[in-house]
Amino acid sequence: VDDKPVFLSGCAQDELNRFIISLQKFLNISLFDRMIVSYWKDDVKEVDTIHITKIPEAIINRKWKDDTLVFDNTISTLDDFRKKWILPWKETWISRFSSLHQTS
Image (cartoon, rainbow, N blue to C red; front, top):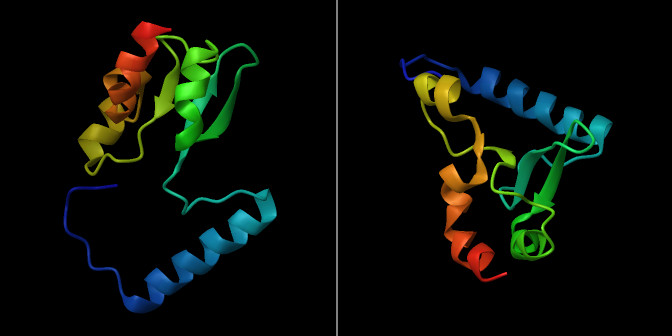
């Protein structure tokens, strides 16, 4: 993620996609599924993922606390990457679920 224009040839893009696809297979994860949110699971000190449709349930069941850290992959600049990539979920686009959290 860099906000400076860089020419990336079609061949380089294809090779990058092949690498990511092979990495997905090796790790048995989906890196292209934008419905998956990665977060820091503090109780076990590891990164975990959750499908976006399961977030309200995680909030209700208190598996997510106000300070649960998420990886915000919607950022688009190097500065945002440095400052905003990992934030408490209430400071990200996921905060739209906060009204549900307050009623639980």
